[in-house]
Amino acid sequence: MRVAVSGASGLIGTALTAELAAAGDEIVRLVRREARSPGEISWDPSARLDPAALTSIDAVIHLSGAPIAAKRWTPARKAELRASRITSTRTLATAMAAAAPPPRVLICGSAIGYYGDTGDRVVGESGQPGTGFLPDLVRDWEAAAEPAAEAGVRVACIRSGVVLAAEGGMLARLMLPFRLGLGAKIGSGSQYLSWISLTDEVRAIKFALDRSDISGPVNLTAPEPVTNAEFTKALAKVLARPSVFTLPSPVLRAALGELASELLASARVVPARLLEAGFTFRDPDVRAALTTIVAAHGANS
Image (cartoon, rainbow, N blue to C red; front, side, top):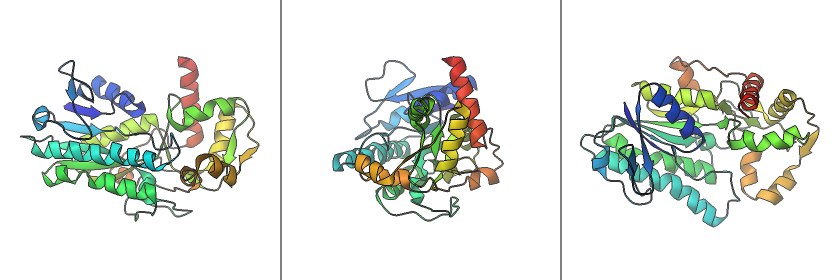
């Protein structure tokens, strides 16, 4: 296929485009500057994408967006997070709908933040949305893809959990303090973490891309969520370091403000639709996944 990808230079995008290219697909990157080759399409995520640029595209994978947990959620940051996801998705979906012919499929980035704090309750794709900034953001983000769906494009919204990779994301930020013996559980440690290895994230996106019967929301999480305490213990064990500290909730709230609520929230989310469709995880166990990731990182360092 000829696949257009936004966010192709990010953590997931880099790994995904490499896998797609290795499988024989042609990658066309959506870039915010002037296109420099036939392998690029120039667009302005906040305003416009020429529909004519998409007429020879078979599928679109939309992964761009400002990082959720990179900064405190000031009003300006919240506006940036919404614009980088909702406006860009609407721009892309509108252009796809106007293309003649439109691409056949849109795989649109999303997040398990849709469900809010689930406590100990296990939720699949039929779970109801939570309340608060992040659930509202994700709900509006997914709704922004509707112009493409209304034009007959198959749309799958991939609700990703915490993607584990040594190259970036949460795990990359934790590696150094844990290696120094400063690993700590957050708050009570009883809150659930719904995670997925980068390897399975990429495989699941390719699975959704290739399966014509998959549309709507799809949870991209490993089948066994773990508590923060369990994750902390597993990472410390893999790195052969102690983990005796606790980061108290009040300290986290003082440092991060409203964003701390998301780190302290519990997300016990399962990939019901992937499992029903026959997807097999390579990394279903968190300790085994961390072992593989850390070993590969050491070999590549």
